[in-house]
Image 1: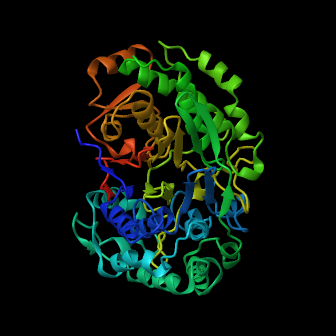
Image 2: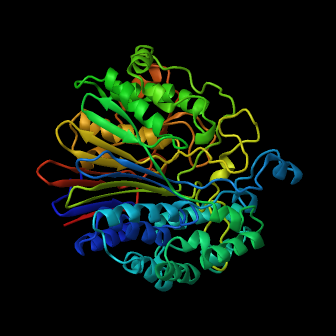
Image 3: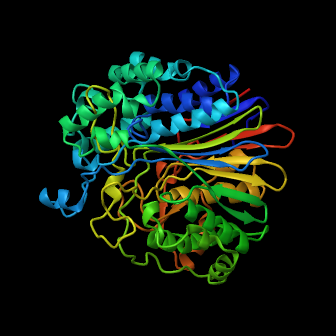
Length: 535
């Protein structure tokens, strides 16, 4: 079992080692946690392109000692021309998963970097943007060896991606997926980062960069326009929170599934026993997940179209009732059909965490939805554009109904906790439907059951439902879970599917925790290509 790394002056965890190293370098130069995160976010957008890109969205949770946490919603809206009629005129009964008509929302993550930098400047952050983007520029110009993960997912998705505009030119080598270790470059993306470093991040939406991006989108057939880009602003939002017996946990409001993540922990907190067996732990969290997902699927979509205040579902009386409904020995049948059922969700996302020496903490997530997003690569800028809007449905009664200027439902949800013992913890993962489940596994193991942080991330995990485009809704378990526990879960009525070893379907988790002594602990996921870096 890996030891939990510790540091005092700053620490970052990321699912690609180059991103962790970029963030650490900024911390060493006196940069804030936010400045370190922007350096890491830019670097990972280059070196892990199947998992995230600046053509996607982002969300932030930022905590400064002595002040309430701040949330940033840096997700984009559908274009003004994105209506159900647009797809019906194209002969489609649903939004496609790939291609230009899947690239139907504004890419919001750069706007989130800009908002976060404004907060950092209030902390005294002063590193120039050119420094924060320097590693990303270098990697895009000079190249980075393709990971095993990039090689695998390029191969497995090549048939559906190879004909998308710009994809083969940018991500295939002589018509084939790159081999692990093959140097991959993206000079147009390097030039864009250099442009943003000189002109500022707002240029992406309302400057020369915006004009180039909009022209590219028009050429490939996306319905997103220059007007849509110019209308984008990342938003400061008040995080959701719920009180546990161990402290206060935070997540983001809709359009994210942060509500579900908080509900799962709150329900399990009412069920848990410190002497719980592995069966009790997994069964309790899975049953809590089912209750949370039923509410999520019925309620969460565009923030402007919610039927109820999401905070109502965190009311202690409601949580008490839902917890009492959970049978400690039997599984609720699953799935239960819901209106406007959500499509299977993929895991092409990255979560990263930073805590600096002043105790300022950042939980950050950046995504393009499916691996390589829409598959569309803009020729002038080298940007992979997300397909987040492909999750929207043409049924006007659904919470995630398609329409102009709307935000799609997001599985993305960065988490943060302020514990009663004084610790500040940031944690998260990629993995679509699995994100709140993996968050709950890591948090409950470490905080509620006392497992060391790295061990809590490394330990075998589970996933209820669909991910990576699979239609299966089984309870998937890594085979390192004890065979007796697996048998007990089957006996309780869970539809169990056993997966081998360490699998990507369980997400790429990470966590950092700062103690009152100033010691920072960190963990990275052996399922990823990541690292923890501190000093």
